[in-house]
Length: 483
Ligand SMILES: Cc1cc2nc3c(=O)[nH]c(=O)nc-3n(C[C@H](O)[C@H](O)[C@H](O)COP(=O)(O)O)c2cc1C
Image (tube, rainbow, N blue to C red; front, side):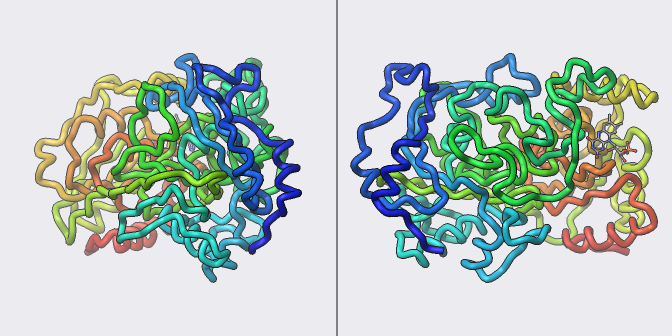
C-alpha cells in the first residue's frame, strides 16, 4: 500500500498535531518541547493513517506510588524528537501484502498481525520501505541489526517513542482517566486494574470485571487516545526497537536502549493480558526470534531525518546443543504442575526437583489467592527449603510452575535468583486455568537474562488425556530425546 497525503493534508495534520510533553507545562526542564522544524515536516509526505507526534519532554517510567509497577520502571526525564506513528496496529492484510504470508494465530484482514518475531517486524519494515521507494531503515547482518537514523523508511518505535505516544501527555497508569474497562480495551477483562488485591471485595475497583474476548479485534476498535492512536493499551502488544536493560536515571534525549542484549522490549499489553500489564510504563520482553499470539507491530517513521546510526549486537547465548544433562525443577501448589513434571520425567528420565518453601503457602484456596497476590505485589522472594546440590552439571533446566496472577509464583523467582544460569537453556512449562503463560515468560527472562530460553509449554490445568502427546511434541521441538 503506497498512499501518501499531499502537502495540503499535511497542513491539516499540523493543526491536529500532538506533543509528548504535558500540554499544561510545555517547557518543563528548560527544554523546548517542539523544535521549530515544522517546515521540514510540512514538506514530507505523511503516510496514510499515521499521526504526527510532536516531540517534547515527558516523565518515562512510573512513580513509586503506582500500583503493580515493576522495579525496572524507574522514572526519568526523556525528550523525544517528532515522529509519525501509525494510528493502528499493523493489520494482517498489510503484512500479507508485503511478505506473502500471514503467521497470525487468529484470522481476519483487519485484525492485527501477531505471531511475528522482532526479526520478522524488522524485515517487514525494510521490505515495505523498498516497495514504496523509501530508504530501508535497517541493515541486517545475521542476528545483528543496525538502524540508520537518517533513513525515511518504516521502522519500529523506540521504547521512549512508544511510551510518549501512549501516555499522550498523561502521567497516570493508563492514558485514560480511569483504568480501562473491557468496553474500552481488549484485554483479559476478568482482571481489571487492581483486581488482585480486591478480588474478594470489589467495592474499591475503579472498573468492574468485564468480557475476556480470547481473541484479537479489528484495529479500529474502541476509542483513540488523545493523540489519535488506537489500541495502545491491549489487543496486541507492540515490538519496540530497544534491547531490554535498566533505565538511566539521567535525563535522556532520543534514547534507543542498550547497544546489545538478549531480549527486546514490547509494550502495551494484549488480548490475553491482565490490565496491570497494559500500563503505559509496563515493560515486557522476549527474544528477538520468538513470537506470541499476544504480540504484533505498530510502525513509525521519522518526521525529519535523524543523524548517525545505532548498532544492535545480539548477545543471545546459543542454547546448549544435544542432549546434555537435564533437570526438571517445578513448583506446584495443587498438584497439576507436579503431574506434568512427572510425565516429563517418565519420558526423559531426567532428574526431578521440587521447589519447596520454608514457610509454605496456605492449603486453603482463597487464602493462597491472597498470599500469592501479596507476594507478587511486593515482589517477595520467599525462602526455599530445597536446594539443587550441583546446578553446574545441568545444561538444560525445565522449569515448571502454575500461572499465578498472570505471572510466576514468587518461590520460582527465589529459585531463579539462587543459581547462575549462564550458558544453560531454560525451558519453561506452565500449568494454567485459561490465561496460558500470562506474563510469566517475561518474568523468567528478566530474572535469568544470562540463560538461553527454549520453547515453552502451556498446559490447561493437568493437561488431561492429551498430556503425554503434548509433552512428547514439546520435548521434540526442544531437541530433547524421549524414551
Ligand atoms: C494463587 C493462584 C493464582 C492463580 N492465577 C491464575 C491466573 O492468573 N491465570 C490462570 O490461568 N490461572 C490461574 N490460577 C490457576 C492455576 O494456574 C491452575 O489451577 C494450575 O493448574 C495450578 O497448578 P498447580 O496444581 O500445580 O498448583 C491461579 C491459581 C492460584 C492458586
